[in-house]
Length: 173
Ligand code: S3P
Image (tube, rainbow, N blue to C red):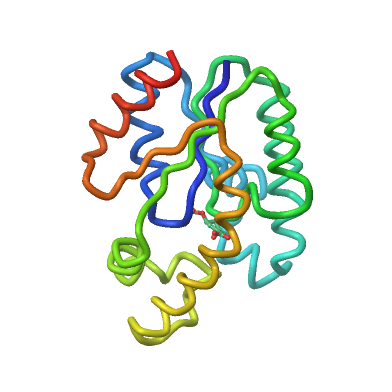
């Protein structure tokens, strides 16, 4: 069974994914890294040169490719992966995977993303912390509709990466 980590940018999908993969001795695929390798480009460059619609199209296509080619992996997705087209439905209908939503509060996401927004084209243009906080509030509200359809949900606010990882193992295995 594949384990798919979903959640907003900055929710810890990559860090949790890598600890989960090493604890379970499974292969880790990071969808953003996979896209960058396949396209020989960075996420920021893909957005600026080809546009977001192109990015969403290949994001979905690579997701399908990864799931077709793998059986027991940990997959950390991008924050928008389940939120476009019918991707969440596609994940729900796939019986050989479980989705885990890493739920993180608005203020924690704002603090984390303020420090690392430059490589994230969706938020790179936001100048002040207040702008970022406002943007995330609305965006998270829209995206939560999709995130909340996941098989499992973990509120990560008070948990370390290790505690989140152990909680996923306890819930799923
Ligand atoms: C995006 C999140 C990013 C990356 C791209 C778009 C989004 O991944 O896929 O910049 O729309 O939320 P992370 O969640 O790993 O930052």
